[in-house]
Length: 257
Image (cartoon, rainbow, N blue to C red; front, side, top):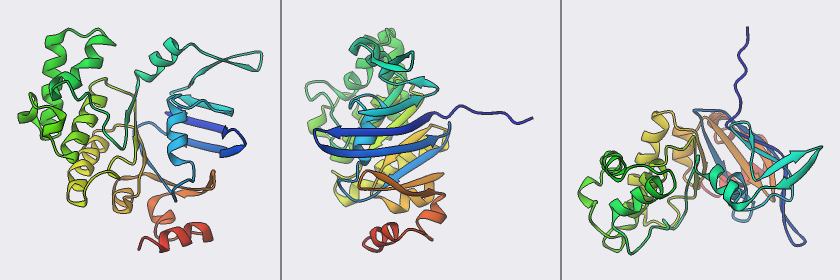
């Protein structure tokens, strides 16, 4: 008997337009639970826009996006989509962690306060419990000694590791990473990727927009190459990165290696 698993992310003919500009043009994608999917491609291909649609930070123009079987951002009645309230959208986002390029930490709060903010005020966790969990996560990212520091006192790599800990503190079922190392100095990239590798090893479902091909090769279960709003090619890292079939993928990778 075959057991059918619900995809953690399922995109069905997803379009996103800004005015007359079509940024996503019919994206179909499945991300299975416990896997790491890396999305690669040139700037302007729609990678980050797609990621932001997954948690309804951007509203899809057409198509449907599901996370763990639940339609994101909309309710469907009689085949017609009705946008849900911002309050209900925020509830959906509780289960979807997101790490941005530029950290987005609260500058006026300490590292510890940044991490416990959402668990306490969104999920209603007792402060003592949230602090205990936060310290566990800071140990995981190698920053236990920085609990009382402010973001301005940290390097970019340290800030990004705090941002990851903050997202994981909500115990999300899915983690989205939008080029998490692109704003970092090269020598700081490795420390962030190490934390992401640890998360992947723990079975976290991850959808990662990245330019780090070595990371995609080593950690991803699935690599998606996007260009001009389309998924051009997708498959195992060894297929897409080492033996790309489409000339657009070949041209892109040739600029990197």
